[in-house]
Length: 235
Image 1 (cartoon, one colour):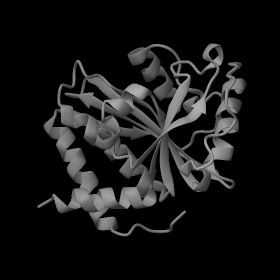
Image 2 (cartoon, helix red, strand yellow; image 1 turned 60 degrees about the horizontal axis):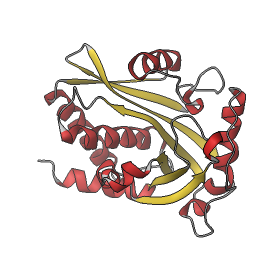
Image 3 (cartoon, rainbow, N blue to C red; image 1 turned 120 degrees about the vertical axis):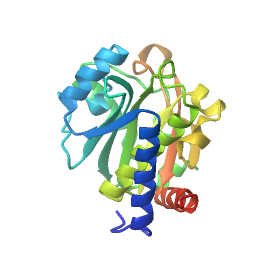
Image 4 (tube, helix red, strand yellow; image 1 turned 135 degrees about the horizontal axis):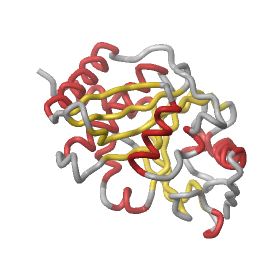
């Protein structure tokens, strides 16, 4: 992992501005590493169980390697959630990710079977290694939060906090075809998208996932560029 940010002051200014923007929407942001609480909130707000990557009953999730965020509207109703975890990958994301994820599902006694063992040969994931942050459990109650801009701010805010906290080499996530084809990737802060990173047998895919999943990547350079771009808009 790179030891320092190119513009730490700019990063801090951008994060503060995003928090102020949330306040203008009537939202209060909280970060926590209490994943027992996250599990309960997630179950209450969305139904079902948290993904195994953020399940404290089967994986170590402490402040040094994971945190989650929520947004409360007017200090009362929770309207947004997301979570991040840091893993040190010595090989590369392409070789490591499937075994890591399938292993976590098996620890929870859930069987998932891939239809493809690795992504295509020229996937960017084959050169990603080091400190990699997985970004998941993204949820925004669009019926309550009707500010389109909030989606843009919330995801970027979490990614930048993870950058400041850990100085990772990249942030990555998995998403659906609809997320990509509706243009949400460009708004979320990710710099790269690839179809087919994971492919699952139809009857043995993870709960809530599609048979073909898309990889989203924001490398360190993407995040540093995001900071520079957002900082340039500030007074």
